[in-house]
Length: 619
Image 1 (tube, rainbow, N blue to C red):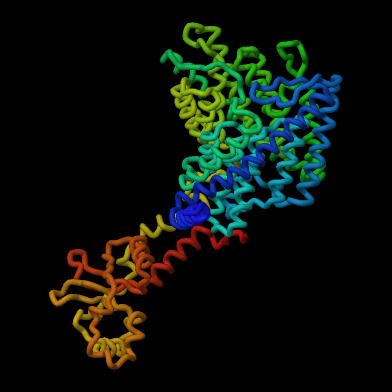
Image 2: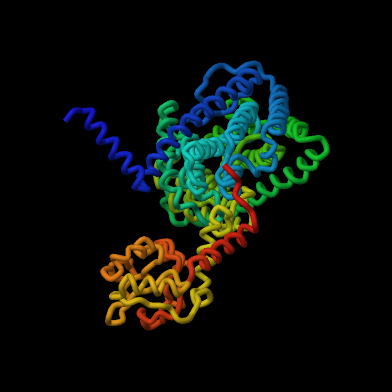
């Protein structure tokens, strides 16, 4: 057989599998989304690192530590001119405000950051993120982080990856449900690549949209997208994890006491972190925005960030004064893990990072809260680890491990996402040595932080989300029963031996459109629809030859105690307009009929009540 024939056969098998096997289809789509989001992550990461190198390293002379897995640009620092940082951040704030106000004003009240905007798009916007929103927010985030703004890469790349998924779904003319799944797949691809943690990125994307739930249907395409995106990203930047740190392990059960204390500390600092952010955003910058306009409010936010950045320095181990709260801060986390930052220095940086992030993101500048949250959580955990090691050195032998556990526990608490960050940390440490303390601290912090959330648009669960209104409707239909909707009374039941001529006379003298059929022994055996016999009714030569047995279709019934969801499934599966209602004890005892229109009307009314009369956004 020629190779071309083989190729054609393979293509036909591929198309057949794509169109008939749902899981295979989502695997293919996940690969496509992963390729696109991976390339976006590569470009975004390169621009951020290049911008930091030019603006902070070369022009301002700021020497900030870089984690082992990053720092792709090297060279001598320029003259020390820290006063340029406020100039850069102010300019970024003004430009961001102008671009947002001019081109994407609908995003002004879009939520906490790019991750929250993605959550909002999933729940309230039919899975739609406009291309210009993702592009402008992404470029503004590059400028924010590069200029020194206290923000992370993960939030923007989540929104840009989600934008890729939304755009692809629109081009493929997918339904709103499928578009939402692609939205999460794109977000997972971006997050898994930029954090170099494919499984953690995928799990975080599907769980961060809820407080007490996760989007199981999106798991398969999200995992595939994250793996492919991660592979593309590491092809350009290598497979080394972000942090160059030793392996940590958990050996002493007594240490769980200190990890429990860590959870309480992270919950308390998390509460302070979230409350500070919301206070600065809503009580300072929102009133400023009303008085002087969005652009000038963002400009003032940029100025405040720049001044705070240079007025809040930290002395590195080599004696250079550097920006301890500028940009994401992963280099400082690595130093802390390696034991090069004392406990007092961690307290100092926690306060500064919280204020800097609140000013940057609270003013409306683009960037993510993910990395700063990990930073603050890591330093909070490191504080417990350092103090524990100082007073109980025989128990707390690896204080650096507490920074990693603090990162996961803190984010689990403020973002209500316990699984994804936990897996991310195991991927960062390249092992499961800290799994037990990670699980303990994350669970405790999640419970302690249940009354507040960093992300404003998180839904409680699926039934609280407009994206799952239909699921909630099913729940409502399960609470309504056939007995309240069917029409009891005499039902015309046909015999299998009834001739077509007799059937024609029966149809002419009743308004019943669907007829149950029974055998000679009285057993309910099938259904006749007037639509199915209409073409035969005018064949007079067949009137005495054709009997009901030749025309009937399969039987179906409901009982009075069945819920309306069970009835709905039977209507959908048979396409009947009426279904017999049988007695509780005898399926051949037909006591009435239930109409399809009545069930569909109950379904529509349930949806309308849940949506409150709202309509989904158009494509």
